[in-house]
Length: 73
Image: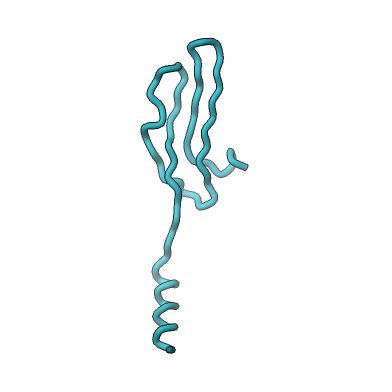
């Protein structure tokens, strides 16, 4: 029993596991441009994916996406 607990302790201490999320990223200004084909892995464990869209007139469609901690609060 002691060997099992010791092994479990060694595994949890020396094998750090880091979970992160993968988000689509990109930036678009003019409507029709390709957007969201690249991905990025969020470095911060408190980060979330965000997606911002704003339209102006008929040709402008501003979009931005990626990882952020502060934009998602």
